[in-house]
Image 1 (cartoon, rainbow, N blue to C red):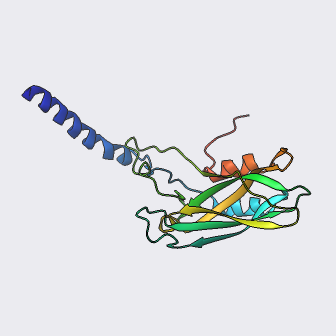
Image 2 (cartoon, one colour):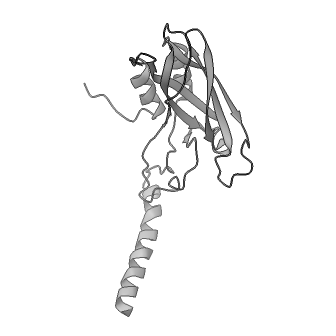
Image 3 (cartoon, rainbow, N blue to C red):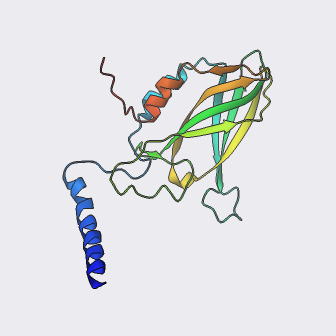
Length: 191
């Protein structure tokens, strides 16, 4: 019995001793969902967006739900404009939040966003789906999601896709390039 306890304790101590070694080896360690984002490149790409449905304004309101015990008390509101000839019935918006050092941060806080013990973290962006909207041609609406504003200083967004009232789905041609930039350009094209 004592022998098992000793082996377990030794394994834990060994693990603790090895974790800092990866940072000493020149490997940069990121916390969950924290990687460099080229915010200027995202802004430039978004300025050339000619998709019929676009986010034209972003506003964060702090402490909207002050009675809640969760940390997602703030609200991110997005003004979405419909320049198409059809009524928009649903839409998907991609979002990447970042801090003042242009490192990505979670839009919302979840318990899983602590630390990756391996020193590597999965790069993620937020996918915001709004399944029941009704945006007439030439008009706009405001959609909102709870957020944790103290975690980020800015948010870049792109309408990736929308479905009209007839059930036709349209995908933004900038979606793949925007997503690649928002994820910190993690892939390398070899050919």
